[in-house]
Amino acid sequence: MPEYISKDEKSGYPILVDMRSLSIKYRIPVLKIKKFFDALDKGIIMATRCPVCGAKYFPPEAWCSACGYSGEMEFYPIETDGTLLTFTKIFAKPGSFSSFPDYTVGIARIDKEGFNVLAWLSDKIENPKVGMPVKLRVVKRAIDNALIYEISNRD
Ligand SMILES: [Zn+2]
Image 1: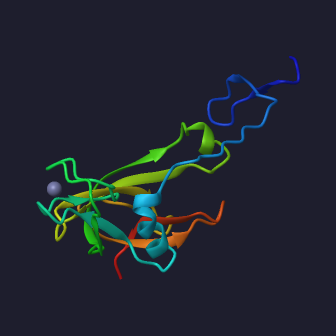
Image 2: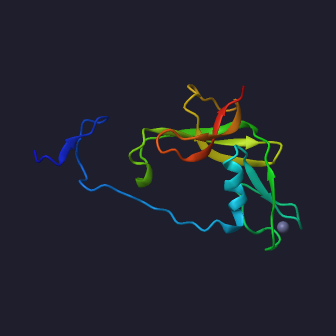
Image 3: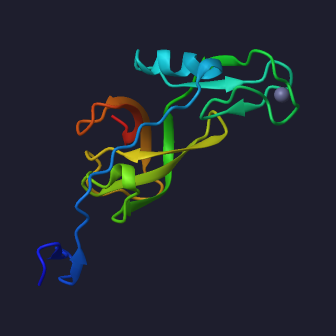
């Protein structure tokens, strides 16, 4: 067997091992939602609200798709208590997370805001259950030091 063919740890089947490493650099314009990242840096999760019609957006959006307003959106800190609606463990990861251990993503309903939030689940939630009370928290992800918001235990 050639050296670039290995055995998959989970299935035991032969797999081709890619000999190249993948490096991805995202360049996303954030001028009109920079306040979101500034607040995240302080541990605060912000959404935007349209000053004309009151529509809320999370993640923040730079203009209102409900009424067409394209001026300055209002930023406000969101309520962080919610309920876990669903979750799934990610085994087949996208390329940019291919070097990460398997992780779990979920959707939390934030009742006081009237919207749902998609995020990674904290690895401190050992046994997630649909309907469990959860809280959004800002954390520094250990593997890459990225500042993210995650779904965690409420305590
Ligand atoms: Zn609007």
